[in-house]
Length: 72
Image 1: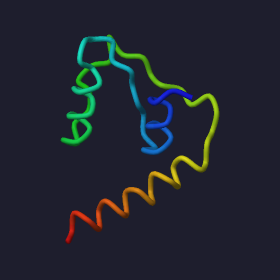
Image 2: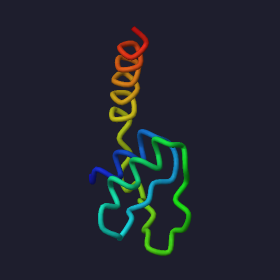
Image 3: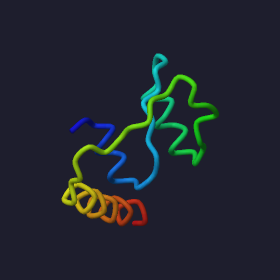
């Protein structure tokens, strides 16, 4: 399973692989800002080929832990 597929499973929303340079950094920044990619002309939608239920559960545990640290 690719990293992008794992992200798609954890977030529960559409994830796209951008074809341009520095796409990972740009995509992460846009996601953090709550923005959507303005156009998917140079993007490929990530399809989940194999469901992994453990990964989203692990992500939620990690998120709760990190949220608690940030609140302190």
